[in-house]
Figure: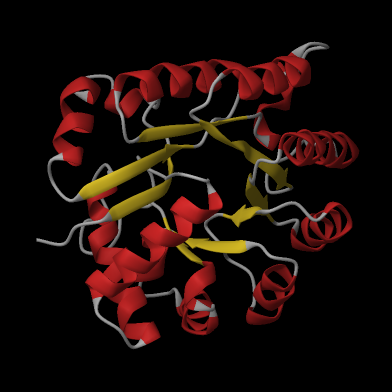
Length: 256
């Protein structure tokens, strides 16, 4: 059985896990999953991650507000995110933060302002960022190059050239089960050239289940399928990919 799986981006607060969450997470830790990182999307999701991180030794969390959740932004949101990060030692990142221009209506200037503000929180606290960028790659890269946080761009869908720009400023590149999809030629080209020490694997569960499980609810164990594709592209075994990406995530998130 493959082991040493580090799921660097999950959403176990999603309602799709409501029926069996308390049984599933312990089962995953007995079935090859070594670490799980919860990617928060708002204050409620941040609170879930902190509570879960106290229940499970190898469960860690971020705190932050997603660009598509800015309708929940209040005058105290960013102050609360910074407070939660300071007060909880299992908060290992600020995220999921970024830019998403896919859906209308959206306020690009507000998204950019809140993205930058959360990067500044991360930089003040010495934490990495978990970054979401969709249909906004140039604005996202520009902000990251200006503020130069450490962190990961998750579910990467950009070009090799963009990946190289991000790696050049120290960012990691994260791949989901989308890497296994038949139409994932672009992502596969990037996964083949990412340096081994900058590669992370993730689920984005319950979304992005890999082939051949694409119609199913995703969970952290399914990273094994993504690892098999990444291993082929990198010219190593699936277990080697899992070992490397686990060490990469532990290094990024300062987990010892």
